[in-house]
Amino acid sequence: MTDTPEMVKFKLTTGQQEEIELAYEPTKPLFDYLDDLAELYDCPPDSFKLVHKGKVLAGKTTAQEAKISQGTVMVVMNAVKKSPKKVECMRVR
Image (tube, rainbow, N blue to C red; front, side, top):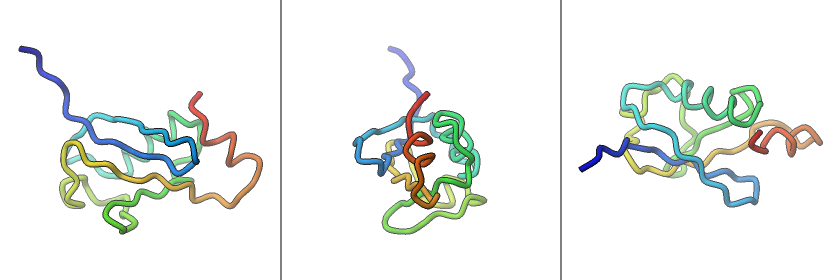
C-alpha cells in the first residue's frame, strides 16, 4: 500500500478550466500557496486572490484556520487589471 500525499486543488478563473494540485499542509499560510502558484505562472503572488466558499481568503491565515482540508478546491482569481500581461501571466511556463 502506497502513501499518497494529501492535496488541495486550485481552480483558475482564466476560462481554461485548469485545476492545479498542491501538497496540503494544514499549518501552511495561504501566502505560501500564493507563492507556489506565482512560481508556476511566473507572476507576482499579489496578482492572485484565493476564494473558498464565496469568501476571499486572507494570506496570513493558515489552511487549517481557513477551514481548508485535504481535497478542498479553491478558486484562484487574477487580481491584476486586464492587460496583455494578464493573459501571459496566467499560462503555465
